[in-house]
Length: 347
Image 1 (spheres, rainbow, N blue to C red):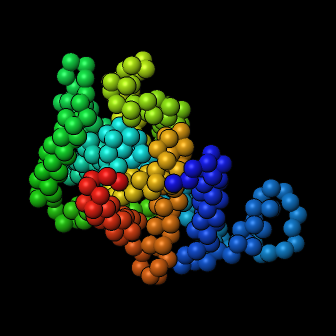
Image 2 (image 1 turned 135 degrees about the horizontal axis):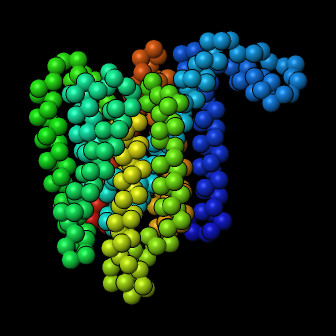
Image 3 (image 1 turned 60 degrees about the vertical axis):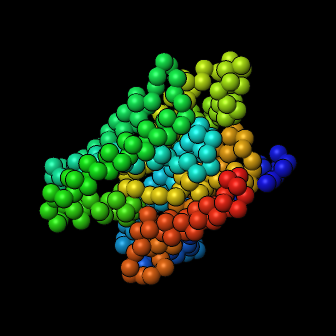
C-alpha cells in the first residue's frame, strides 16, 4: 500500500496520464490506420493554426475517427468509471471486498428489462428502447430489493445481500422463461447484448450516459467522507451523528443509477466493479476520498484497454469487451478466493 499522501496523489496523476495515453493509442489503432500526424494536423487546422507538416485525414479516416472510434472511447471511459466507482461504493457499504454492483440485482434487472424490449420487438422501432427498458428493469430491481429488506426504518446488510440474491435469481428465471419463447433472431439479439460490448456505439449513446454517470459519480465523491464513517459500522456511525439508513439508501441508489446507466448502453460487463476497486484499495488504502476517484480512473483505463485489445488482437475478428474483461478478471478473482482460503477469509 502507498503510505504517503504525496504517493497517493501521484498515483492519481499516473492514472490520468495512462488513461490519456491509452485514449490516443485507441484513436490510432484499428483495421483502418489513422496516423497521429494527420490527427494533429487536422486538429491544428480546426483551431485556426497554420501548419505545414503532416497530411490531412482522408474522408474515410475522418469518419472512422469522429464517428466510430471517438464515441466508442467515450462510452468505454464512462462505463468503466461508473462500474468501478459503483463497485467501490458497494464494497464499502457491505464491508466485503468481493461485492460488486450486481449484488443487489442491478444486472439481473437490466437483463430482464432488455429481454422484454427484445421480445416485444421494440428494438427494431428505435435504438433507445432496449437501453430504456434495461435502465427501468435495473432500477426497479433495486427498489424491490430495498423494499423487501427495510423493516422498522432499518436495512440490515446481510438481509440486503440475501434479498439481492433472491431477486436476481427470480429475475434470472423470468428472463430464461421469456427466452424459451423467442424466435432465433431475437434470441441472438439478446445474447449479443448480454455478452457486453462497445461496438456500434455512437454519440447518441454518449449523450444518453454522460449526464447521469457524471452527476452520480460527482455526488458520490462529494459524499466520500460520509462513506468513510458508514464503513465504521452502524453503532459508530450513529454515535457520530450520521443517519445510517438514509445514507445507506442514498449510496445504494446512486451506485445503482450509474450502474444501470452503464449497463443499458454497453450490456452486461463483469469484473470491472469487482476487480478494479479491490486493486485500488490495496494500492492507496481504504480512504474513499481517494479510493473513489482512483477507482473511476482505473476502471476507465481497464475497460478501454480491454476494448482496444479485443478489437486489435485478432484482426479482422473482434473480441467483445465483456469477454475480454472476463478473461482478464476471472484469474484475479480466483486468486482472491485462494488468498481468502489461505488467510482464513482475510484479504
